Amino acid sequence: MARTALVTGGSRGIGAAISQTLKAQGYAVAATYAGNDEAAAKFSEETGIKTYKWNVGDYEDSKAGIARVEADLGPIDVVVANAGITRDAPFHKMTPEQWHDVVNTNLTGVFNTIHPIWPGMRERKFGRVIVISSINGQKGQFGQVNYAATKAGDLGIVKSLAQEGARFNITANAICPGYIGTDMVMAVPEKVRESIIAQIPVGRLGEPEEIARCVAFLAADDAGFITGSTLTANGGQFFV
Ligand SMILES: NC(=O)c1ccc[n+]([C@@H]2O[C@H](COP(=O)([O-])OP(=O)(O)OC[C@H]3O[C@@H](n4cnc5c(N)ncnc54)[C@H](OP(=O)(O)O)[C@@H]3O)[C@@H](O)[C@H]2O)c1
Image 1 (cartoon, rainbow, N blue to C red):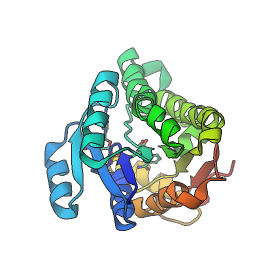
Image 2: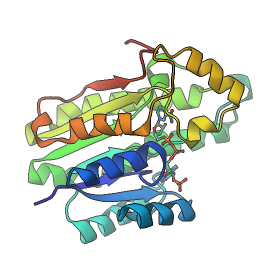
Image 3: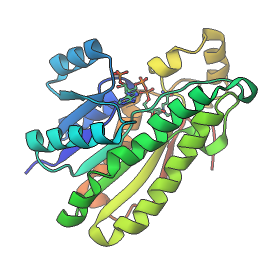
Image 4: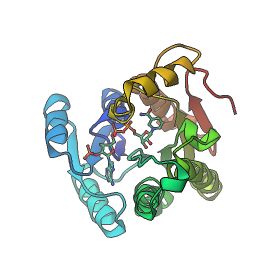
């Protein structure tokens, strides 16, 4: 039987490519989003992938949404915690609201996404947990104290879950993308984007599909020995 995958933030950007790649590989895929109904409807129409709307920052919302997905598609075997936001500002100008918004979506949202799925994975003795972190969680970034903190936190989550999940055949891994040409990156001023590209040895932004193939690799049934790892895909910009 086809395995079931949940991709949060799976209707746009990197998440959309992940959803489509997993579908192409035979997974039954559910993609979630937060509020952009138009983009989600267009995505569903074009791909045939069902979308679900909830805020990953809200535990009860996440739990109820996940129950809906499992009622529709069956137990979730692969969870990709991809939904994320930026609220950039230099630290001296960063507001508590900017801090809390990013922590709530990018870090608490990862907890809220994995926690309701975890007991079922333990019972069924199979699971693949994949968290989309970031190059800036590895190296830090000017103007991103909030974002870098959450993305570094993701690495702590997977390293701990890898230890807790190992005897249940559940793996937990993180992917650290470098700069990928999605709305998130296209929203930064062109001059800044050019200066970013100048720092990437391969001389270009990454494609969402290049992250999706990392997910497919880690999600596979025969990837059971890879756990607690961080897969870096950044065009050579930063080596850990
Ligand atoms: N782009 C990059 O260069 C880059 C680099 C490193 C890491 N990343 C990470 O990769 C992930 C995807 O980034 P992206 O560039 O593809 O982002 P994106 O194009 O902005 O898409 C974000 C997706 O997440 C959803 N989302 C945002 N907040 C949410 C919430 N509270 N609850 C549920 N869904 C929510 C959005 O839903 P709506 O459509 O409803 O808004 C959308 O589907 C993020 O975790 C990001 O930090 C990105």
